[in-house]
Image (tube, rainbow, N blue to C red; front, side):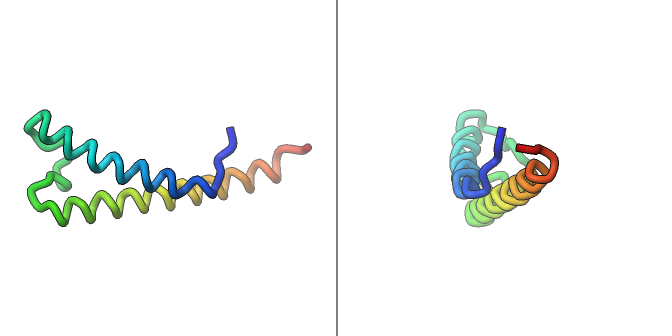
Length: 77
């Protein structure tokens, strides 16, 4: 499996979509799924989920870079 650094926007988009799934889960279950981002303060929750999506995409990009560097140095063609 090869991680592609250019896929980081898809990872950020998946994190943003998860924010909406989390909000629907809160409506469906009637309880908060996470203790801090609990939809009581909507602007704070939205900013928190966007921050987490960006962090997730940044970590993916970094891991993809490290993985491709490792593959280049350890796998001979």
